[in-house]
Image (cartoon, one colour):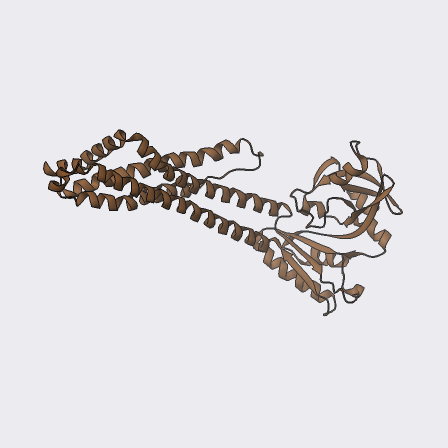
Length: 399
């Protein structure tokens, strides 16, 4: 019964000072909404970054020869199609094995030459890179085997060379070579020129590049594993395979997406911690505001406290009353802040692409509520203790 009475008195006191109670809870509203929002933003950004990295080639291992700029290295050091065939035959955990070689070339655009990247790709390249074909088609088996003079070009190159016209079926000249465009593509995930594909690139069958260059050298060998748990195994196997097939002096750089994914997750976690700390600072400031307002309230209601004590209210009941007031301010602000923090992502979700989801963490909701209420109780304890310690006679004399 005493608790009910304390709650009723606290509610009456807050209703008597509605504006003050609302203004005091604004800090808690902002702080609790910030906790939910920063965790949601961090989870969304982490999910987006990881999906972009994985879109480059899921469970991918790639290897390149380490070149020394000081001196030319023998052809026996280079990765070649024989290595590709050996990898297919000996590395059972590699589901798809492909390779490519790239060369700098130039196309003639409006009477002027423009640098492009010519990339010769083997079978399996599309299975690993999963390029999005915007127009036309990808290479078929006949293109690969018959050294057909066909190519795919990036959308940027298509726009620059052919403008608004459909490039499929048109001729593209690079130096002394002329190709028929069979498709226009773009990367599934933007790599900002950090992969073999630049903004203006041309893909041709590797058999055709081998015919023109006279070598079967691959600048990069790519292997797609059956799952993340197979990546490290395949990484070791391809390294051993190349060492056994080439001179001991040859060095190769084997890379995976695992390190990049790990770095992305670490950066996302660090960002989340920083943002949550900022939100906690906002709650700390709001808690100090609650304490200041409650101290003023105790001073203003000194006579009321004296009357309650004179008619038999115990110190514990007075303390409960003011603690409940602090809890109602912080708890009410927390609920409103959480509703705002959950509502904003729900609204924003409607404006985002269909493949991007905004995950709302239930843990962030619980954390925001508990921290906000704890902040209110912690900073409300001193004013409540001060109110409970007032002497009835002195309180009744207070004007």
